[in-house]
Length: 499
Image 1 (cartoon, rainbow, N blue to C red):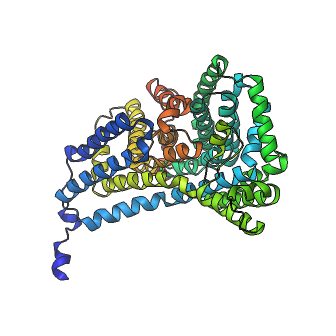
Image 2: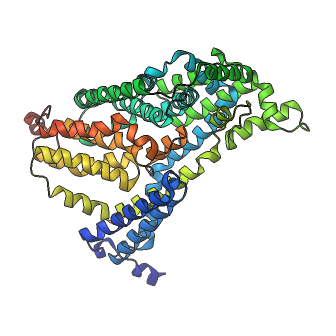
């Protein structure tokens, strides 16, 4: 026992990693992920990326062992990192159940039914972005918007013959604009807390970069909508509406589960119980209004109706719903959901968080950040460096919260030393870490959006205009020294700012 204990390296025995040590796992990961995308294309996140992340984590562990870290220490780092993502994993599983019950209940088909009649293909992408922006701004959750309105908008897009990749980009653009600017958003509260400022000063300062970014995005979606030529013929639209009407009998009463989720989210109930209650509301609607569909879904005449009802709802929650409208396209669109549909995504997140955990606990990530700071020579380079570090942290750590907290914690002193107000740091954190998280396939946000919307991250990435533009707008402001707030010297003398 004592011999085993003495063999463990103590923190004083840890060698400081060299920059080469820190970069080897990152370069290895980039090469393997590139190979995965080349060999498996959009299917790379179904297993190939996971293997790349695990192998890169193994390389990082070998380097950590060389520098004096024991397996137990690195294992604790992995467990801690995965622990950060536990909440996201629970939400993922619950959203899978929600999608299954909402389709079975007719909630999603009803949103598609009305949306196809209201939304014009010419402005559909723009309307998607605006609608998601308004709802996300009111409830402060991009994930809730994607898991509710998002899945319906993708369905409407497909039924109209529009590009679902562009639709997903519009949904994500709007959802992240609203999330970023909402005082109820967790990231909007986290960024100023890390930087050392208040939330409303943070939101006011973000307006200068966020509003121009969403305007540029809306112009892009409007152009794509006006030039789209994939609108189906009138008869096809009429046939789809008739099928939805015959199968699900759409009505406003079937939107009750949506209203439940939006109400709870607006009341700031945590995401996991909100989605679970939304799932139960969907199950209740299915039991009350789609009884025959549930019985038919089970395909088991030996069961009494009430037992078949319970079994059908149960299946929808864990394995999703399989539509049988008679239309191949519509059946493919509505055959989704269930906790099982999220297993691959959870697998991806676990592997990504394991890699990020090893990189952080062995000091390899900190070593990279320290080296990057050496290139900072002024205000412009500091802000642009912050943006680049946060994007890199999103890629390496696979979690937007770590990508906000870790760089924010390390760079806070540098902003104070250069007499820059904390709102500059908090804005830079959100303009990079928050908005680029859904653009990384193995990031918790990217994996969630891909699984929920049914569109691969690499497919919607070119069309997530807001998320792509915002970091560049922020860097442009820094380059031209526009709206860069100086530090109030009185705050240092009164102790409000701690260096």
